[in-house]
Length: 84
Image (cartoon, rainbow, N blue to C red; front, top):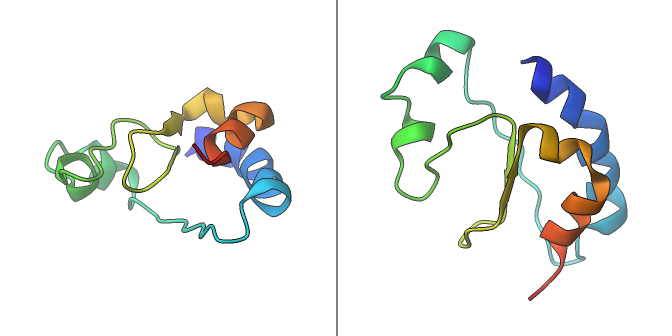
């Protein structure tokens, strides 16, 4: 995914520098393009995930998430990592 490739460096750098010490970062593949585009893709239909775009960075158990070009902005990623 071209957007995933673009987001990889800013996300990795910000995870290394700003993820809280008790934070856990999990990277998950959604499969190949046909699998992702399938409306019945489990990543789209799962009630806890409901992904609509990739890449997506989310805080599990909250509504906090960033997608696509938002992941090129390290300041936005840092804000996502901030504790409430």
